[in-house]
Image (cartoon, rainbow, N blue to C red; front, side, top):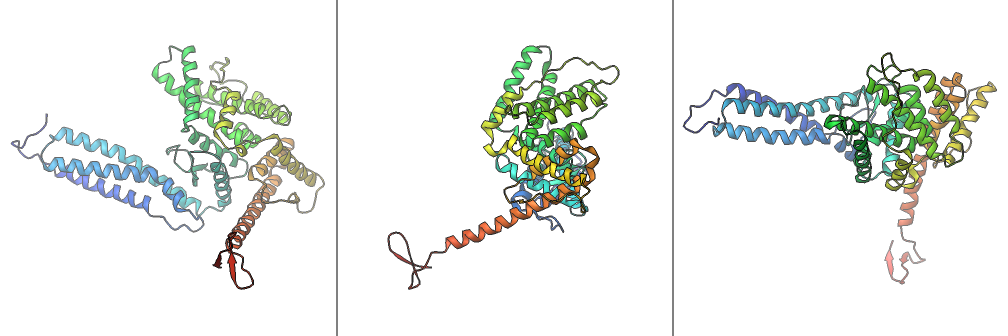
Length: 437
């Protein structure tokens, strides 16, 4: 029941005090989102910073408007106590998301700025930057150390899972790019059509079952994307280092099996009949059956087919992403050559360990270095430490060569932009008209 102007003025001091405090907190979160913090070791571009804090800024400004609206209603005595408090509670609940995201981002950035292994985030930034260039609707994002994902998948910074800061788990940053890609209209339609087919086979599922299946499809699509973009390195990192061998629930067990199956089948689809990925796929299948093959006690071990077809998924990816996004057998040949050289160096007890490959150039890719590492690891697991060191050095060399190439390109562009001068110090265009250089 709403109050009228003839009603006695309700005692609002407690509510007004809480609204004032909430407003201050929202303004603080808004200010943090709009002002870049100077970090010692992390240089964040304005565009990336604004995208990273987009949700914090949006929620803060929206809820500040809602508080002002509620304050105006209180002054006009348009609300009775109960609906007034209920409105406040809703604003507080929505605001907590902004506070949580702001705290997570600031603490993650501060941690990244101080950890000795910041190079992992640096390489991850470069992987994300390169992949984002080939992905419509996905902007470059910042890599932040976090324990788990608690932010909005479509816009939040990619996280490196605490404390997994090493070469071996680095390919898994592609998973969140895959989640972000589900916002693409073509991939959204792909998932929707797959859901409709699933609903036909599971009419009893209900809304809760459909929501759970959509979430599962998004995870599987992200795994397929990770394999599509980073090749065997993603598949190996997921199956051998990330999936839980003893999940506590039946649905978790089924999802783990489906994720392992998805990356293996994506490798088969991407193989193009060359057989180059066979060794990796067979290794993952063997490890899965040996480590994960037995379900936890009391859980069903029945078959659970993939709700997304890997063949159709690859075709969808090919149509959505630029051609250089897919990891090809040719890329894998480069990676195997590097990995085999490292193994040969280590086998020969070469002084100084595994050498940098000869002729590293700017066109070489970080993802090839990560795949070289995984090729060497699954071929000879005893070389993990030495290969990790060699891979880090190779990633650094590739980025050094790319930096040199970019600087040279800028210098060449600047030189070409200056008009050539004739003997009189005047540059002539094709029409013969003189312009001062």
